[in-house]
Image 1 (spheres, rainbow, N blue to C red):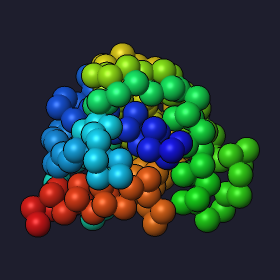
Image 2 (cartoon, rainbow, N blue to C red):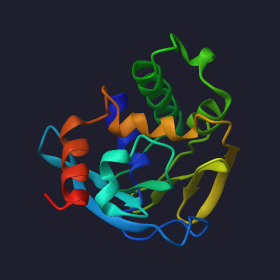
Image 3 (cartoon, helix red, strand yellow):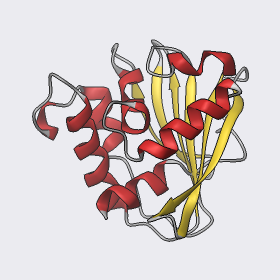
Image 4 (spheres, rainbow, N blue to C red):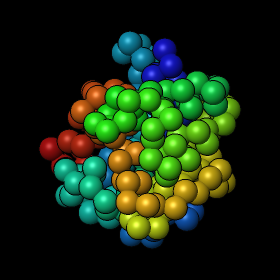
Length: 175
């Protein structure tokens, strides 16, 4: 259940890029996220400079992952889920205390959110990794070379939701 709550919250910006996101980003794909295939938890979207490069989503390229929530989420559950998914997806990390600084900075910044709110995770290579809630900056973490790996939460080998991952990437690539 923790994973479901976290994904919903993090995917929160299906309609509009965060205000500080690079102007070149476009919404490449959008999918409704359902738990157990029955009830909607939110709408997830992937934003890139070139949607044809969706296969490079885990590389250090500018990107944004958004989730517009269809239900309330507790910040502590999102934090727990983000940390757990990062540990599962990073080969050199065995527990949350070992997370690279910029990844821990963002993973621990989630706050409570209500139905209808949107979370945006924005990555600007060699600059920052940032978290927004409804266009309000919650935190900004300087990229120290590993910020792009935060997106392994949704697009890594052990993503939050494999079906969502596949659908976002397929739609972004036009398949």
